[in-house]
Length: 276
Length: 276
Image (cartoon, rainbow over the protein chains, first blue to last red):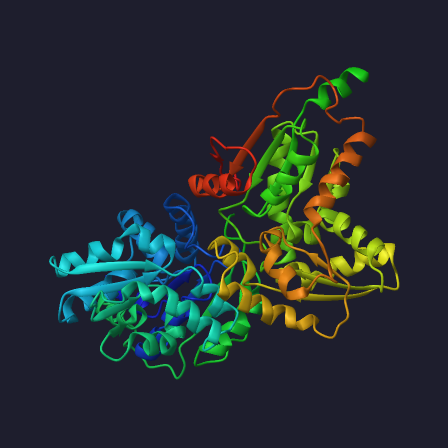
């Protein structure tokens, strides 16, 4: 028994997202758990997930988890808010290994740190429409008032690279005007692309609103989970953890984006046909 | 032999797109060929196509054509610029029935009507990067100068419904500034969503630049193609042609969008799993 734990410790963590957004989660895991090896899958052939239905997202997530299992991962991080919202609770009972999403850790910290019990959530249509953040926040803080607003143009603006652009500021002003006079003291960045717009959102919301980045909380949650299951890589310290990247399309473009936001240089992203 | 032509005349035309954009082509077919029945497929589970690779688009297009063939269509319209650019020439030799895309008809009319031989093309990253419009224009007008510009935010802006919005105008100004001092007299709207931004584009480009809408030309081309193959529905005139809609996801949302731009009311869009 001990033997298999020893083996598992050195197995990689599987991380998946609809595309590049989940790299902000992978980045936090690299920072906070520098010994863990990672296999990342980005579903770039079917990106984005945010506007698609629950049934479709569950089907896609199952295919990806199947692939990650076949690669011998020891735990899975669903680094996509939409997939966490739609698929995680459905799939968890089918799983033998630990699995963690980005919604619960972000919701928990928001529920516990809000002063006035008024929390905003921004995300894709799918995530906001699912009301999953409201549900998760109420588990920890039943009296909290949760206000959700979908911001569908944020992802394409980030992918266009217009991170601090006047157009992006105007779009953000429009979307975030929803929270005017709502008196929220906490805003959850409920989509993995949004931390890349953090400074624009910070300028509009002001310093009195606490911005919650679920990527950070998810890495913390993963650390606890690996420890609980006694599968954290606390054995012999390697100089560098190993990171592997797989995508379902446009590997070169993925690699360039990844190299612009990760702390390390990616040499290659491998293409696989996830449908098969 | 005559018998089978008679049968085929009443068969529907298959039209497909990555999502809702191709409805602007379906709308033109409804207007110009009011007797033709249509089966439309929108690949809403995998939309958008514009940022994906050639190999992926060919695979998706093959699956959809297979589905449309199984529905007994007599001809196929590829109502998506990216799929026309990447997949049409590849797939045509495999086909038994006539197939037409949106690129060739648009390129032909631009090549023939330009006065000064300077033509602009706007479209998705995939369409513009493929240089397919340049190639097709040169078949009809080898001396023409063709300038292409990808406009990746136009599709999400249309899908957000911001058709005549100040943000859309600013984004369009930025993208179209590319054509300043280029002296083009013709601009091809090389993505099926773009005709919905026609008035914004018209205001920025001015009256001296002729805007080519490939949807219009494609319906004209389809009319000629059906006649050539003697399969046009010129038989007994039905009061109303029959239109059927299929999607790979989010049928209700598709229906609402379709009803906002089509001349007729859609009762239902049916969901199918195109991967299987």
